[in-house]
Length: 341
Image 1 (cartoon, rainbow, N blue to C red):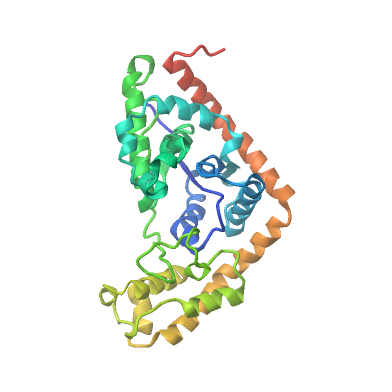
Image 2: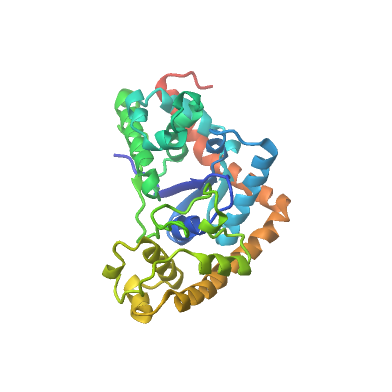
């Protein structure tokens, strides 16, 4: 079996402001991984157009999300940071992999059913087959690990299935038997699953119509504090241990956010606040959120005001990404039987 360099790949779509869920659920782990792994972080703008985007707004959103990446602590000297559409190998490999993937596999993808809604016939073909592009994003770099949340586990399993089938289908043309390493999920510890501030049973989302449901990374201090204080709770006092949060989704969400900001366990937080009312707890959480998110918002705004710098980061990142992807995709073309000049 060939040796593959341990390599991490992940990305986010440039649609809407990044929020606390993106930061606690993914970004903190991305930042930590920079110190231990070769990391490639992508702004997946090709995925974004699976639903219609106003072109000028999309261009702005690519800059905005990249600015947020940098403001949170992703370092272009330690990681490759780029936008997907600047590396044509993603699209080329996606076509090859679409000819390897099976229709039945895509039919099982629950996220398409959720996003397409009742009128699936009106959804774009891109929305249906975008898990194949996601597989290409990963496999074009021979990425070995992908940090994923619950909503993307199914897509990573598909990428693994496609890699394995490609290796099997073209085994006679692959010297070592494995060309694409089946990517593994990256488990970095208890990444916080952040829920809506208005409904603790729903994930915090960019698409929620209520801005009070989320903390955007660009919210100012007053807005952050107001949203925390308005966050939905229940009439009971805070419990003294984690088991007491069962069946109390809003309380569990707020305590989880507090623990993630502090870097402490939920039990440690409840040992301090258990038996008390939410009012004083929310005041402390608001202060903590402002202290953690305020500098990120300020730096994001500063970077947004310098789009030339952000574009230079993307240009450099895309060139570095292409040096990895180009020979891998070229070899894939050769393996499937294309004439490679």
